[in-house]
Image (tube, rainbow, N blue to C red):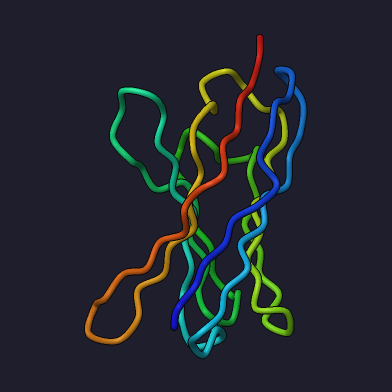
Length: 117
């Protein structure tokens, strides 16, 4: 059974940092890319960052480039999102996601990040 469990969210002041984690299970982790998404109140869910299975390639939304870093540890079946210089606009529920065979997508339940001004 595929499971994705996010953790690490919380309340932080503007300019602060947080590190989100996503623990994965139920599939061959190294074989699949992982993504972080976020959904702010009243807004659509948007992709934040993406990393390939081996970790050799990453990409970011323009809004977070230079501030966020996605990484993964394939020995621990985990993907991370290091978020620096956080802004109030980064306030959202953050989700990790993967797309497995046949295009089936799996999502975690999310972790809330609140950035105060």
